[in-house]
Image (cartoon, rainbow, N blue to C red; front, side, top):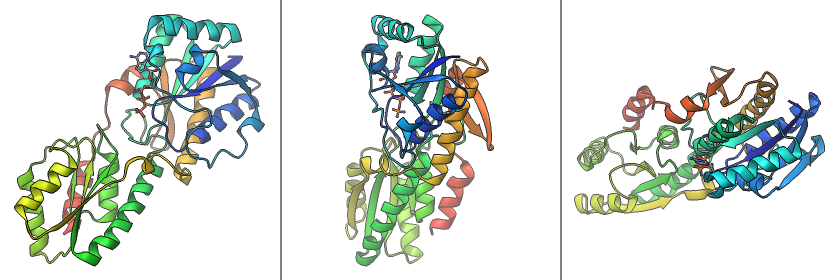
Length: 323
Ligand code: ATP
């Protein structure tokens, strides 16, 4: 490859900048020209390319968000949109594309590669950790720590007032943030989309907690858990336990922001490097990931379709240790 382009797409995640920096500087190291594309696939379609060199990415390794900005591009989902994107790549002589994002981003990249043959490599940047082929996605560790710190603060107020707090963390399809932040903060129960929960189970947990002498409790709830909204849960609990002082906290987008953790900066640096060297080795339609501390490439097909399993041992551990 002689000229590559890099973009960030889908939901932003802390560490995307560190990945971008690694892509740009690795390309520079190997004498490959590098263009940054703004606002995800929209930038490809609207010809928003900027030549980038080592100094374009100075002081961004610790910055949250993405300096290239991200977007959800509806136009890229159409053949006409992708044709425009390809015409622009052709115009700039791009022969390799690095797409930093989640599974939607990889789906788009895969289709683009299949239609036009341009080499594409994905870098997993999403806080949800829901992508197969890498132990962790970029942004997950930071989001987890943000959630943990916020829940710690909520616990301070919960214990001062004998309260029950329902805390919602991000994770529409995956419970990794909920399970790990819940375990790390001693949540009495953790509700995730991967596990079939019932209100009876939740009530039984409260009863056990009461018997064990717990005076306050935190229930961590993933956005996508199946029992109903967090407000429904709070209402149902109030009906079952009228004496409880129940509060709801939704952590929301603070989990997406902030300076990336050390683990995320290192991961992003390694995967950004891997994406460029992968392209140099002729790899395409694959995602760079880290498994057991080793750089691996997983076909988009698998990365998109398969899912990381929730660790049952962690699930059990959180139940045993909470009471
Ligand atoms: P996150 O996991 O954080 O939501 P994501 O990469 O999965 O990130 P999406 O919004 O699903 O986020 O996808 C990002 C972009 O990828 C879309 O806005 C669209 O431009 C492109 N894309 C997704 N699916 C397709 C598709 N089937 N065909 C073409 N492009 C697609």
